Length: 405
Image (cartoon, rainbow, N blue to C red; front, side):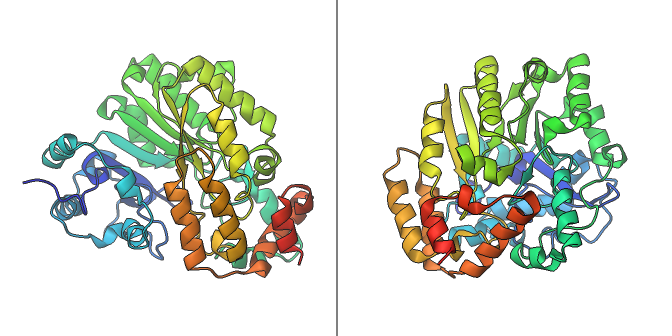
């Protein structure tokens, strides 16, 4: 029987994502894809009523709940675990499920022959950047901001603008040697084909480097594709000598160009990022490059400069547009005025980039507009204070005028 394209998604048929890890390094639940837990109060999207901390990725993939999920998606049933994508599709936004569609022939094949090929997990919060839209559980550097907010009685304010996403616990600083799933990955490099990692920053993490060196030593590196979510800032010659032993399909997270990039992804300079990306392209010669961009109030007027930079790289670039998370945080696009959103849409329509999903995101911010200059300015100013910056020196004049009315 043919798969039902209205619900079919390849992830549950090929992937497992053990990504919910507590402060002690123990897995608390798992998903077939990394987006399943987005915008949920309860991260346990599969509604598992058991201790999963000792399960291997292979045991997760063969779990009865995963079998049920696969049957539902193959047969046209909207499984409740996948509400992240259902919600996006109901709003007219291209969902992660829709982005991942494969050929009919291959979809039929994996539907009838599910097999674990992809492990999608994350490392601890070791990172070299303090990105404004991130959270301390995903970046060790953001502890500096947390300390400032606590010292100046601003921690409740950052909870407000981040929709309580800001973590003051040690949730992201777990020890990777204590995580059962990471140890299985290190010891079973022949049992999967693709390793997806997010962080933290994978290339800033010594455990990731140890894994790469181990796979090279045991001869499995040539059969493994690395699909890391990386900030792409650490590609020096030594790192690239190691990376070239693998197949690579990285997703670079770059949310701006020039001084806007530097403002969002503190304390990296644009020159350092540009050099690192150029090194990777020159030495690894990828057929194409995936770059993720999160449109926010910070960077919505910077997209033309960013797209021109992408266009001039020495390889084809595929841009993935994703809404900022949480969706109601201060710098979310829906808090910008409708007039400015319409102006940004007009500009985006004149740029020679794949922009359908970006237009959908802007349209959704217009239709569901909740203009909130105060909340946006509060979030922007909080980080200006903790980093001794001033948005007047970075943001586009249209935004500055709106923020300072």
